[in-house]
Length: 134
Image (cartoon, rainbow, N blue to C red; front, top):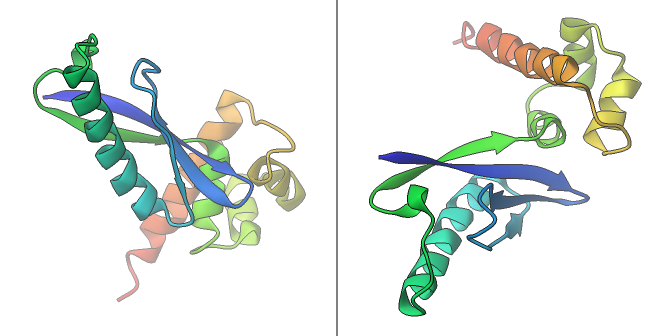
């Protein structure tokens, strides 16, 4: 079974998703991440059916069984985690200023790869500590 990378970003007021392989041209948007994940898989399947019907070449990773691998941008990660943790808590965990985190979340600035990792690791660390609460 092949993995199909699907990129998810935050665009002003919605999450947006599209397959990394641009030869399968489809995009979905929505307010809820779970809805976007579900809808992009349905959209890709629909697009593939149309491509097959039109005799178009199907990219290799979509031949046979495939499953999605969702990759969220830092902006999408921050917007999603806003539902569960505060930027203050994330700032404390990562050492990144709250205002800087807001710049990343709003798309005013793009974090470097090491900063992206630090943010993702911070979100994971906070969520892992929360699992001890029952």
